[in-house]
Amino acid sequence: MKEFFLAWSTVSMTTKVVRSIAEMQKIAQKLHRKGKTIGFVPTMGYLHLGHLSLVRVAKRYSDVVVVSVFVNPIQFGPQEDFNVYPRDFKRDRMLLSKEGVSYIFYPQARTMYPKGYKTYVEVKELSEKLCGRFRPGHFIGVTTVVAKLFNIVQPDIAVFGQKDAQQAVIIKKMVKDLNFPVKIVVAPTVREKDGLALSSRNVYLTPQERKKALILYQALKTAQSLIKQGNRDPQKILHTMYELINSVPEAKVDYIEIVDLDNLEPVSEIKDKVLIALAVRIGKARLIDNLVVKL
Image 1: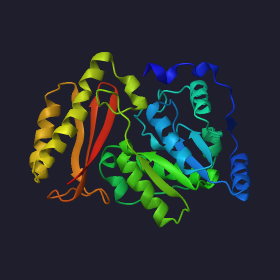
Image 2 (image 1 turned 180 degrees about the vertical axis):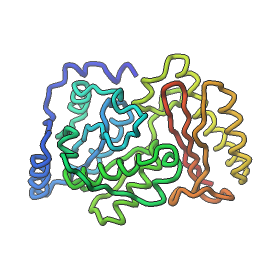
Image 3 (image 1 turned 90 degrees about the horizontal axis):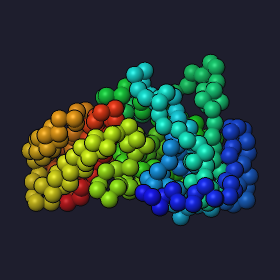
């Protein structure tokens, strides 16, 4: 990870920061009038290599890249980590400038949700599965803010990460149902060399917990190996995964599921392609990860 931060403090500040909704919309309209395509990466900041990989995908698909940095309050529950969620906008700005991002949309919460705000977007059923069972209201917050951001930034393509697989499925459904003229691209999960999926919340892990967290990826790879060896019974595979993760006393499982990649329904038999998804709490961190397995 050391090279990730080298020389970033010397990067010139060529990226424009936009805080106003009206200004961002005017910029987007002007770009479209010039025939430019807009690629968009929504983030909550505290950027890591996973975020920057999304930016690089957006650059391949578009003429101009916009990244939003906004810690969205309405996707956090009352007992969750909104107030302590890691933030470092100065570093984020430097990193995005180095990547050649043209605009950072950096609004305040009162700008996005002014007094009297009453409108929310919900994707039924999909939002109630997997993480939705443990974080009620979370995905309403996600779809609401993404819908607003799409109307503000007016992107032609938007890039999301496979690590947040459920979010990507939900956003795709919202885009289809509400007729947003946006192409959704899902980019691969970026991992450390030892397999841990990159996440802003990894900062919550102590060095010892960081080592214990590797059990998530080990469980996913074990499941993948069992499927490749011909095991088609999801219950047997889930049992093996639970035993493996429960062997680490610090790991507290929220869920482990093998589901259909399109509707997130649990499968009774593994055929063709499945999503193996899990959420596990280690210390203060709630970690999610997944693998898509194709036969």
